[in-house]
Image (tube, rainbow, N blue to C red):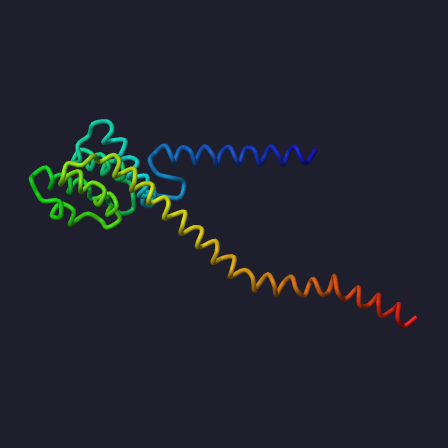
Length: 181
């Protein structure tokens, strides 16, 4: 019977806590205080967003303004709107990208032939996204290989004594007992 009473008390506490949690979230903050800014978005995703915008008919400056507003909640402000304004006002490609963060270099390098020479931007952006993903997969495989090499010694130090104590010692003891009889 006491179990049902404890369950009812815990249910009431959980309901009160969750309603306070969701009410504070609805007021614009989370339960622990101010809402934290988001970490930077993967640059392959940025290239995919750029492909979608260019395919929908956006110009390069309009694309940069859209990306700036889409990435506005990151920890580091994107600063792509300044690049778009500089390009719109007639600035050169290098001048426009001087103030942009270096994390947007893949986007900059992919869009430069489009802006300077009039090349199609979509294949360049798709190739950039594929290259970024392939690099990430390569780095992950290299890290996994390094981890495997680092784990050999600790695993050997753990399993070798266990193997000797559980596998070799009983056989030697039983053979010794059989020989001494």
